[in-house]
Length: 270
Image: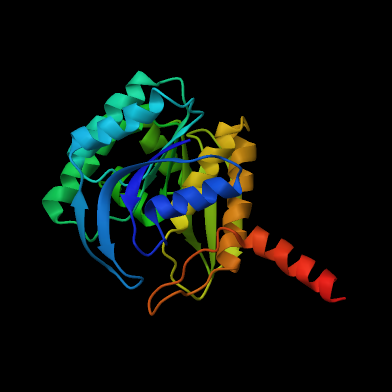
């Protein structure tokens, strides 16, 4: 599976999150680096976007060599990077595409605006499932929302569909003291989950969920099955999350392997 994303030295998000989530779903990841983040577990300090030509050359080198079953688009580095990715998606339009939009509050305003415009024009028309946080997607896709009622997942799905995305997977929908996640089309809610708020801030949860979803689609699951299983996997990764440094927590994307190891060790001891 082809993944466009940034290199994250903490291993919490970006390509590191993609590759471990894909391995959990028995998928071989083909990581295409779009940018290099300078970050620790507390915050992102800076980033360096790779030239669009480098992104294109990386992707085409492996696409001409290895059969690919699905594509995930994470952080594209820049508007120019998204342009290169959009051209590749159009050349492989038969493949399912999952696009994850991360929170871009750390970007300069002009960079963020250019990035979102490129994503809207070049990536969304070729996206099967758009994944993102509720507030991030609502601010982007429904900037002129005037209804006193807060937009729901289907409202966001309808707005995404106007730009070509078939489905949206909206995370972090606040409901009382809980959090809901909804996989939706403009017509219906296909899968949903409600969990209690976790008293921790995670890095890489969105990358983990979107990579798992893309891997399950690559295996041939339908959208409802893939969404349900991806959400269950993310729940396990967050429930077993850990804090590797002095900042935020990281999902344990290999929690299932640790359980097997612990069971085997307990059996040996007995």
